[in-house]
Length: 308
Image (cartoon, rainbow, N blue to C red):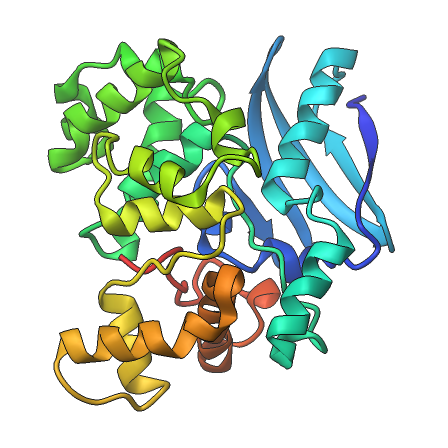
């Protein structure tokens, strides 16, 4: 029998809505089961990989079921992973502050954005979403878990740091990103990436953004996307998908540079929440085209995880 865990969640959390708020739910080792309405994932814990199914049966409560018995430390790791992925540490007051500045999302309750179970995974997923079609991002992350991970889990920083560039190119299909991903993993193994510093409210946004742009494989877009994944929503990750949204959904006209300028002006009034306002507009357009995200199945055209 596997371990069953109860995980406390904010009363306003809706697992189907909030798990399906960002495309990283569609990247291995994470998956949304549309039939059973549960979040599935694989974590590599102290005693090896574990497969998890997480469902919501009542308000303020999640239930995680593991495929094996978990030690107490592993149970703590599962809770920490779910807290990070679903942003359970963002309080109802945090979400209310967003709704106060952008009331369009109050009725739906949107506010939380799904992310990965670890900072390394968020960074790798961001790098693998740049300059490529979403199907390529999906493939690269599937290969990472199949080739480098234990039991289908995402590989550790140490495992990735010790991988040959040729292996990443030939077996994980990462192309030019090979050495950059290895260098990024080495920064983690050397303790040169401090998540606590990046998430500390005392640390200025500009300092975090400047640091992110020094990382291998990180340009302005990747750094801006990582800012929201760190809970800093005052930066826009603008690329070709954002420009498409501006043209097709918002009816903006002009050159690409002019559209980008109009997009920045549109979301500037939302201040420190501007990424949320932008993203939920984009996600709403995806759902109008393909139906509610929590009903999407693998064959359904996938919305992009992030604008490239």
